[in-house]
Image 1 (cartoon, rainbow, N blue to C red):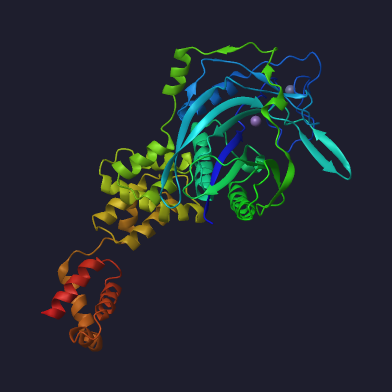
Image 2: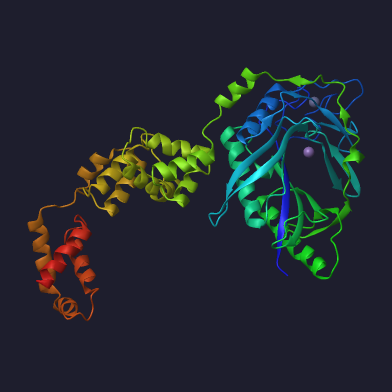
Length: 478
Ligand code: ZN
Ligand code: MN
């Protein structure tokens, strides 16, 4: 039987703040000694009062706006009650019926180039729990992470397969990095996924009558693997006439295999009620509009500008825009360039030789990346060959010299004096009778390339290979 998945995601993202969500404890706890970043508030001691972090809320609003969400102008915090040793208050301060943002969407593009709008149900603000460490038969508790701000993003069940889940996760990660509201460093647990998944026969439209939840997935590749392994597991059950159990499953290992953990809680189990220690928050229009106006150009818009306006190929544009820092550098390089053909060439060089050289050579402090434009211009106007261009780039990057200077010093200017080229062609023809005969008889049309190679060698590469090819053909065919 052919099935497709019905997948919704919940994503928890650590915003970039100096202090925790409801206290002054510093957020730079990663790698620090346990319980060194705590206070009565984040330890849940009686009588301690939470004070909301304005910066965290601001970042949550920015993300909500960038996800095309509506904003609840009057919002509040609620207590979500459940017991875990790493949740010392016995409840988590979260948001229930008035999330900061709701009814949004994000546009994703999968590897195969298909685009889809994934609806965002809500985005709300909450706090993280501490961490339980199970060691030598005992459980140790580290409360450094307790009370860290979290943004929770919930999607509608709009994703249908692992490829779309991958595209969504990457698009969201890219978005928070563009907005500079999170580094989304998964190694540090700054972005975590929860998957809700069921499957249905291809062609069916209603939601299946069960769903399986998989919590705490800390990497995009593992997330994809979970989708694939759940697809197989659930399909087997359905093929046997069974319905998969509605439950929470945990990761067994990084291969994406899961095992049953517990029956899923119902919302009523959490006994949500308004947080009595924090007054409701009321936002004013000018505040929201000021945040909206300050949003940077978003990745989707940037991609459209690169591909539609400059004519840059989609995969090249994707490579450049993936990291905001990279796109920023590219845009600095093309400042003042008005010719789109040059911009397109610069994009190719930028993702090609420029990137590989950046990783492999020691770059001089004197080097100005804008020199790349000069090199591209020299190559595109055929003043130097493409191979020379690569050499010029490497010298420029390692020495900081400018392109014109290097071309002169290295004597790279392409010879346009046709009499010199003609002489070299005559020499090549005279010295290679067999190749000439093979070409003329039609036995080997590629023999001409051998002759071009001989001419280029004599010209020390300083001729235009396309022109040389044409000139040889003309001479041999006459
Ligand atoms: Zn604290
Ligand atoms: Mn949550």
